[in-house]
Image (cartoon, rainbow, N blue to C red; front, side, top):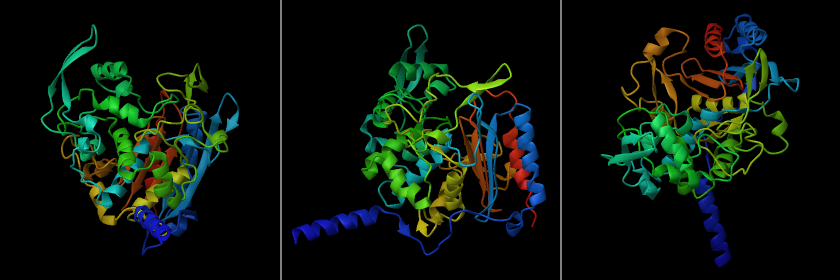
Length: 429
């Protein structure tokens, strides 16, 4: 009887944590003719011309493009090379480091736990990670020895602020403030991802002891807040972050090629990072990160802000779940009402009127952005990654667009904005 009770208890715990079935049952993305969903095949072919020309002109070594509408993939092609030095041609199912596109996935995990009533968005993060208690703001800095003084923050950092880059945290090596760069470097904070032996817990706890750019909630400063959220998911769920994402998000959505560290049987599909040197595309060298990530190294650092690799189809299914109001393949990931809040203006006027605002880990197009042209409809959510990947999803038109490249230090790459225009002009209903 005692054994039966234990098994029943474990079953109830697992069931409570698992994703629930939905009344809706929207199928995963599948391929269809463009005309079946109001897209002109002839106009869609203009993407071919743009991509071929960009590769021929040396703007990029190669790219994979995907367009979907109303749950149907109407365009999915690869152009150019995956690895120029090795003579490897790019394929549609090749895997790319998606860097900051990880942020939306981490935010999704956070909101899944929020829906379970485990915390409030305006709770202080110190409630869960005590090292963030009593945050300090940078006051003075000496370049001669990198010493600094601080003053107490007026308030604690909240979970919402970490999701929206308004916490005052910085971004180390890629930060816009040289002082913060030096402070993070001296403290040994790990930015983005690493092949070194370090966990996200260790890096976040180092980060928690460092000074903020500004008072929490005062400004929008792109930051490592989503890395903090990755560790937060581990604390709240009681699971390693990579395991949580696989079991609670990737498996239900059929995202078989999305990983922090690639299994051996998928490693050959990873696209190397390339840069141009004297008119040729060559492998990008080791800098503050190792391009060997995510196929080698300690495999311990699960960066919630920049650590995942994926394919265009996997990420398109993730976006389709959002367009479906939080459901895909009969599995409810988030409520439609939660997504409504996530796409709301969380940063108010902190970003200025630049054609959009920031929601909970998504950039969102507003009326100004729509009217500028080439940005899709009001409500379109979007972002990109450090290695030249990008996505957008337009709820009004039911359209998804992804353009994945894997480059650094390109001089003339304008394919992202041209792709966005060409997807929009192909709508024909």
